[in-house]
Image (cartoon, rainbow, N blue to C red; front, side, top):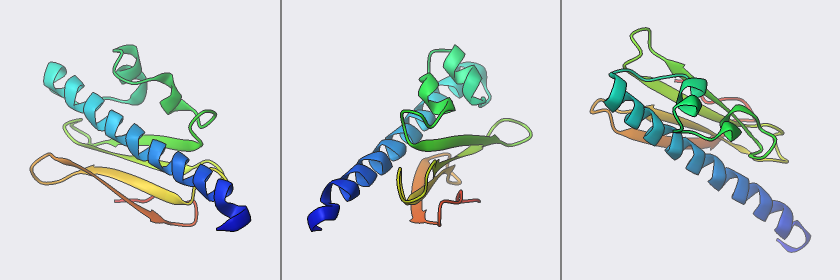
Length: 117
């Protein structure tokens, strides 16, 4: 890697942090749904003390996060997309539930665009 070592290390670190934030989102949605019977938007999860406010902005994380609820709010999927492709990250992430309700995170270099279901 040579001169790109620290640059690549920074991107890898931001990408790992994005994956960890998606895992926190999964845990928050699980805790909320066990208490309320439905999933929730980020602000509701933040107000309930289940997520940090960092999920709303890319300032500290380098990633933009989004959650999409089904119409009945029983299921969801979440995405993490680099705020500045190539600088804050290269991989986009998708958190979705399988048929048994188990969360799974997938990622790929999607040119800075969100992974969609």
